[in-house]
Length: 191
Ligand code: 5GP
Image (cartoon, rainbow, N blue to C red; front, top):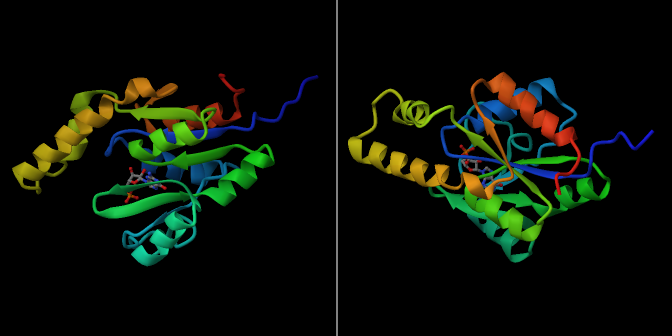
């Protein structure tokens, strides 16, 4: 019998805004608590349902800058006026123990992880269709046309990044996408 433990592996979940990354992660949190999710630091304000230390570590700009200056972030990026970053030490410790690690980060972050850790597996969460993503981003139609136009242009750019990724998971349903992702965490290295 071979070693049945999952391969030590850093998996990055990324994809366009509005595709449903948060819903997929929340389902994994609820149904597969053994999956270790990296907790990012962010300078954005906490949303009501979020728990400090669980969804994010909420820090001010000075603290964030200290972490960057101290080389304590594996990657970081600015998104919609706030900064987000992945604390390096917990990720490195988990990987050293041979345990799988899952990061949910934006595209800029995924590219940095690719450079820092070439063996990372990058997973692109894709919408079932452009029309579906458009529908989610336009939402209830309460935003002004210029905001909607910018959001759609940004989403088109983000979709174009798909070929940079190792695997695409299509978000037909949150349950299926979460199952596929959890399956990937346990599967042997592709490289
Ligand atoms: P939100 O504010 O909606 O929680 O997240 C905004 C965006 O930031 C999402 O695309 C999310 O995946 C991304 N994000 C969350 N944490 C990190 C991180 O540590 N690094 C990077 N690069 N992006 C992150």
